[in-house]
Image (cartoon, rainbow, N blue to C red; front, side, top):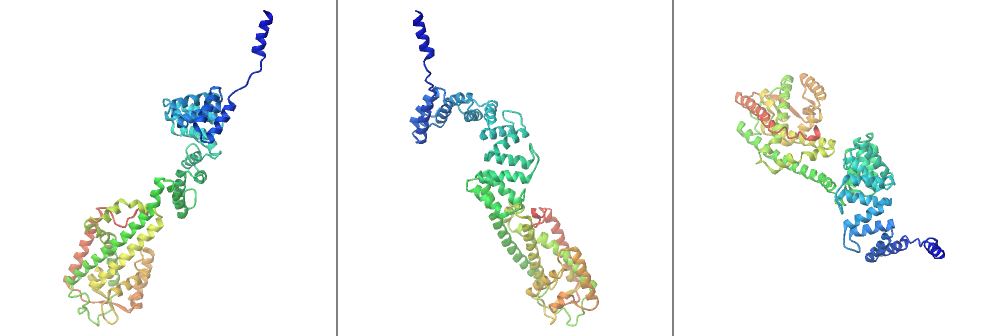
Length: 484
């Protein structure tokens, strides 16, 4: 009996253990998986998983989760992820955390997701560190803690995880959980963008467009917008389209300005015929008329400047408002942002050029039709050529440019005052203003009839009154956001 028990003892305890932990089955499954023979792979993974092989359990869970080699079964996948996770496999812990986070294969449980993300993150898994940081940033499954979010984002980012790099850049740019630093923020966003993360590419484009953390560079901005747009990122596609929309908007603006100027010219021409027998008739001017006195010239000049400002900046622009409420006007109201998003200096210069050009055309048309602006009407002054012929539209336009270039209407108060004083001194000494003299023109006095003076004054009051009314309807046409 003793010998029998001893034999049994030796058989049970002395025989060598086989040590089969499923490594061979796992290796076979991995080989089949790489050959895309998923049915064979899942059979080998299952055998190894049932023997406790953590890697096989993880792989089996992945196959079941995706439906590779077997019918998709996320609940079964979660079961195998948990077995591998409980053995400390970081990848399985992360996947199990994702399942809890998304509520796939199990009930959604953010706190449990954070628990498994943390276990994997503490083992150094970059994906888990990034997701754990996101949970702290959003306050999902745990209390919101930006500093803790940045801590985990940084750990993941330093391992090259693109989403963590981008999120760390966002936190750094906003100063959430860390010191605000635009340059460092752009550095992390760039790292993510260079790995192809569309959101980071778009954000880097925004940084270059606005000069945040980097020198403003439109070409570089569009380069990164394009990279994100090619991946289907909608904001980037919109950003690429907006400059084109802005340019089309400007072309339409120029077109409507031209139409408005033409219609205004016809209106002024018609009024001129009502007031005078013909715009080119100068019979009411004595060929020997004296040169206009300096005090009269500058009094008329001040009224003209005030009148012209009201017409150009308010009424001239709002001609378009009364063109049947055109689609242009609706587009202008809806597209203000296009100007703000463009380079402010470009918008400002473009707008100024439009205003100056419109002022030149309007001023020239009025001179051509009436022989002078409102101030000259009121003070009995007419601008003529040396041969006593009236100014043509071309003459008036060239004179306007010369006056503007000479500083008389530059819009710079200090320069205007100096120039006007200099010209006043010349005229006081019996000379013509430099711009008139260089163009062989004279400013002469004539007898202005009371009817014409009254009509001019009435038009002046009506224009200013209308300007105030129209401006209250929406503000001057040229008050673009880029000016503010």
